[in-house]
Image (cartoon, rainbow, N blue to C red; front, side, top):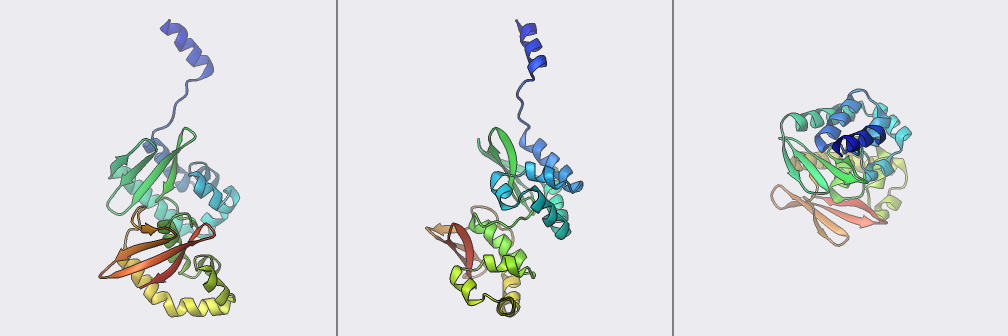
Length: 217
């Protein structure tokens, strides 16, 4: 009976789901090879909706430092990490990063902590995107502002002037906030707060299904 079953498996192929650690290793290899299509395939559905394979390829070529940073975080998570596991997600916890994989359609996919992509689906992801955009990506920065502010700073000149005036405060907040891991924000309906420092906080609001940065103290 067992021989017969083995023969069936050999002919049809037995279903096998890679472990989260195996998937993260493949993700690291894809980053090292700058294989955008493979990185996209190993990413969760939210990341895939953010950028398609071609768009991801352009994003990686335009932002090589983000690729290197994602590679370093992922390697660090593989080499030195503890794991926080559930049936639907696994997080690799290292000293300076949290890499989270989720189970989708029977496969593990990298959801958070890998390559930084423009995301607005959670307060934490939106704030990470905001800090990156503040380095000079005006089009992306505008998308992270509340809708009323987008209308007020519709021209690139006005928005660039705003960013220049605020960037020291933004980067100071970024440095003090430190690691932005999922679950750090305290949500109150369509409002979320990420506290840091002494009585300081970043406030985000959700408008049109996207989280946006309302204020940083």
